[in-house]
Length: 316
Image 1 (spheres, helix red, strand yellow):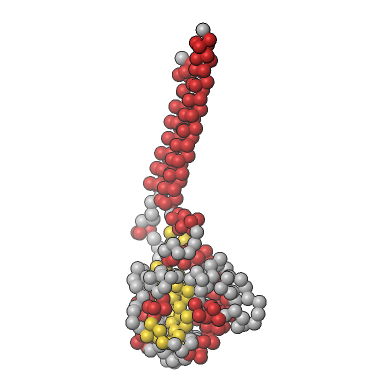
Image 2 (tube, rainbow, N blue to C red):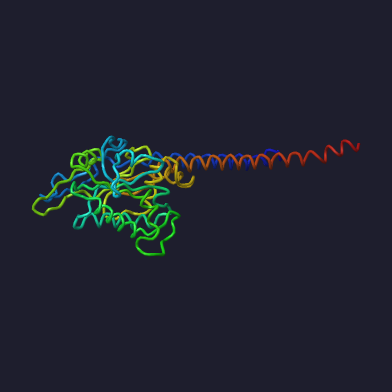
């Protein structure tokens, strides 16, 4: 009778833990997505000069090949060869003589880049294609120098101490490439990325969307980021996700497992099902460890109870 009373707490505790685990795992079923019918969208008339300016995401598509451009050093290059390599790449469509939007957009990008623990040219790259076929090597070179000076970090991630040009040679070579080319090739890149833009003759400027694309080292379009300001954590996770394990830590990959990109919010949000799965697995391991601990404790008690009887039997 005494032996049964000792086993009862272990059985009751195990049953309670199992019920708690089922409740935790069962909670995943409650994380249902919002029905599409309940999602409300707000639409407003588009200004006439912005008609036809849009982004159609081409996720999982490859960057176009065999498109010739010239970089800011005056060297002929192929677009896909510049994008493909060993690092993820941020793709942008801008131009040097843009009166406002490009500056705001690239300022926002550089501002986010400065707050990353990833380094331009070492952990990721940026490739900018000018949408102005009249762009020159000199203007592209000046624009690149301006934004690299604003970025102000060396390849090792430390801030620059010198003047505007200090420490920029390595970054210019491997970090950020500015390309210019023919109207046809520019349009081909824009179509491949899903960008549409217009030229306003009266204002002598281009109307274009404020968006960036993150591509994998293999040149596959992985993520679209919108707006004039990008949250550093969103940019960082986008680059790590696109890197296919080439940058980032195990903790970063765990975070990506628990978070997914919410296009409506433009940021990474918790993935309820994955979090529940992770918690369920952690709970199962904890339960197994607890039961093993209790079982070993019960076994030691039994052996301790048998030892005096065994010694008494030998003494007799």
